[in-house]
Length: 377
Image 1 (cartoon, rainbow, N blue to C red):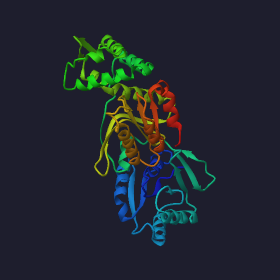
Image 2: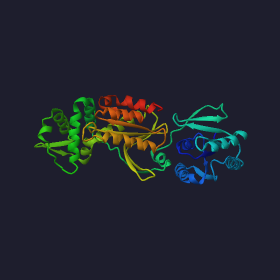
Image 3: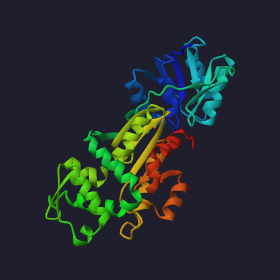
């Protein structure tokens, strides 16, 4: 049975208010929001998202969300406009007083009430309780998801296609991860330098490094670089960026793209940049939505154990912690690193519930991604 009208209660968790209205099996035409003045900004964020999906909204004002008499009076007035099955109450948000007051009115009038278990993406009926749980439709996309929290999406990179031979190089670098870790760092250095020096010269020390020469040889064979008198020339800006770390981001991105066949991934982006309400900007390597839960991934090929990078690992983990805080309590984060992490960084990641996939674990990337996506913590 469809319920064309929904009443929601505003809180710091906008997603459980959005997903039931976006589920087409409900046939939602309009959403009513019980709002006090201090919540207007949050309500506007939700209004903008609902509008994007063609759903109308209306504010039901209250002067205080903690005044039980005012809350029940406002809810009764709204209910008087609709038949019992037309208007449904979502008690996933709001204050304790709002939830109790609104539920009391709906229960007394025998109107339907539900809540959303965001961790499992399930809608649970509270009244009538005998109705079965409902797995919510995955219609939400990255941009409206972030905007619901007051963030502003600034743009994203295109996951550009590249020659099939480059994929062979990715596989080689992952397969030989134990032998190529230093060589990859050296290649990062020359690829980074290539941004301003079109023909960086290889030092004698690096030239004598056998794994680096093997990596360089493969890059020449694949026409990613040219070599002339120990000077490197990158075949294109895309090739330079590929060897400067983009290869790992694309490797993770394409693995996730293939996993769509088995996992409920309903949006996926690379190089997504957004700005929080306080003006802080972040660009994330890979971002995806699965079961209406945001997942952030950072991909690093640099050596975060070196003295020069002493605080770099801490900075990456802090960044992941910050962005997950801006995307809801169930948002998840992962750090994919070509090299191993310091023990202190691993412990910090565990404390923050950030999944890490490092060094030789890359060989089982699909397994790590799948278990991470399916986990509910």
